[in-house]
Image (cartoon, rainbow, N blue to C red; front, side, top):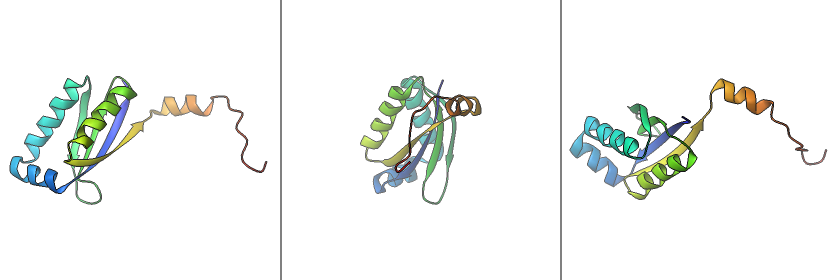
Amino acid sequence: MPKYLFAASYTLQGLNGLRAEGGSSRAAAVKEAIEAAGGKLESIYFAFGENDVYVTVDFPDNVTAAGFALVITASGAVNAQTVVLLTAAEVDAAVKAPSTYRPPGS
């Protein structure tokens, strides 16, 4: 299954919920939501800095990952960015893909 990284920052609403429920409860809720959407949680880490939480997930496809991202962002509790992760083998295949691209001015 394709792998995705979700980097999220909590809104004030989300931070209040985190403080009330704790990290373990939120991790369990995220895992449940991912599995209900057809995915598999690989890891979840809380952090301090620009983002408050990093989640790596296996989802069947981009549509499923996008649906999950829409739901969590629409909750108002987090602002999230989704990153599609590629394996080294996928990058190997990508660099061999044919292209007729011509840079501007060439």
